[in-house]
Image (cartoon, rainbow, N blue to C red; front, side, top):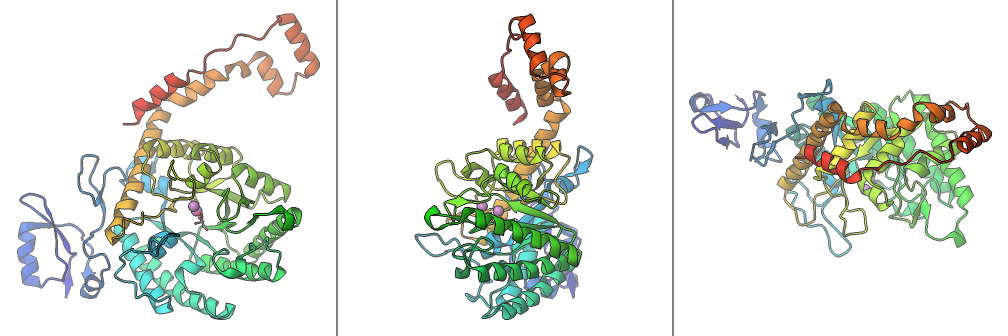
Length: 486
Ligand code: XLS
Ligand code: NI
Ligand code: NI
């Protein structure tokens, strides 16, 4: 027997009613006269019975006035902004590690998250069930992408070959679920930091065997990412860095890191993987001096080692702030080099000094992100990945929905605000005016390389002094920005 969905809206007052089991035809016909059926997708008895989030229906857009906590107020995936749908602009991804593996453990206590589907093991069977959980979540949320580390999705075995077999078994199910739901892989990545073998780093380890193991792991992860149609591949240098220079050969470690990336590029070409390679900067944690400190350090590294044609950057908010920058600065810096590829959307806590990976809710932040992203005509093939976790105190499964709905809405609102500001030319006008001395006269001559030191000296000797400066009007501009943020 097939029931047509398990969510109904009462015609009389529009109240949403959930039916958690399948219905027989008589009852179904009776209900149809009293209720509007929300999802028109047939749901088989088996799927309804297997639901891991039985109290949550597909999250829908209800508009800014909605008070339904399980609805979008701003993310309307089909809505067109600057000629593209919100879905295409934002390319939202859910991360596997925090959302499906995070249990809320911290240095002071174990995880306390309630996840009824977990059986407490790290078995392949559990990993496969978790894939079903993940895809039910993704489907109900309406996020078009997900991201994973190899070790999030499948457990490590006793040897590399057993580990690879475990991964293959889970990848088969991931593929099946991708096909069933249409959800795609934004990026895959290898976890080169959790296992004790990576204590001194992976590509930058003092132990050459560890470099070899990391290479084998990335090789496999590239194959798997290709198999799943991943459109990017991320390198986050988890333990690539150092704590003490007395025992560290800085130059040798950085040369090894570059060698590792060149080998990855070679292998990517060899297997015909067409996804974009991304490096994710982070300044501290776990090591004191992370090599990929910030966007500027990564750009300089890529340039020094001839890698700029093969890599872009995946910029994360909380990493930007740990580096003493704003997210907007990091995005703009990567973007001006043509190297902004994707973002890890989250936020830190102003009062805490570590990577708290909270969900983004600040509209100034999301507006600033979207100003840079729209300014470079989008992120594709990259996207907006929520590398974010619910607080330890938010331990129920429903909190995962609240967190993602809030993050998606914050970005959708930021997108709308940024587009309105761009349509009115508020900031572009300010910047154009501020730099107008470069558009003609001596400014244009400097930019077009017509004027050297001698010409500049005679120009100034003749003029006597520089033209007077004008106010930067910072406060006025902030007030104007505030008119848009509502
Ligand atoms: C950790 C990083 C990590 C990367 C993927 O701080 O953000 O989650 O995004 O390895
Ligand atoms: Ni982080
Ligand atoms: Ni990240």
